Image 1 (tube, one colour):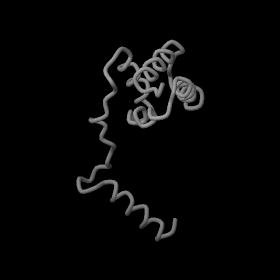
Image 2 (cartoon, one colour):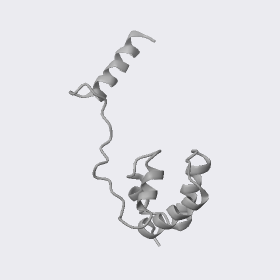
Image 3 (spheres, helix red, strand yellow):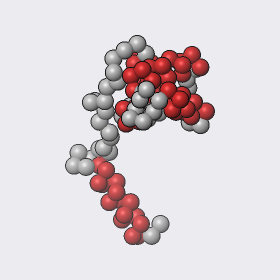
Length: 101
């Protein structure tokens, strides 16, 4: 690695570390799913791989078929450990509370 690249990498790490010296992480303390049956299941399964803000962010355009495709993609392509029964419950929850119709 060249000196220039090492300096760039060090600058990036220091920028991420901020003044506290710790790496910064996304603050999801304000991200809450709509309270209902299966909200906890959805939160547990989905947040094990990605930020919960993906749910409301995608809700502006996903209907049931879109949520089904997203959950299937997370299971098949990303390896999410979600059973078929849990997937059905998650899709129902997402469609009801975050679907477009």
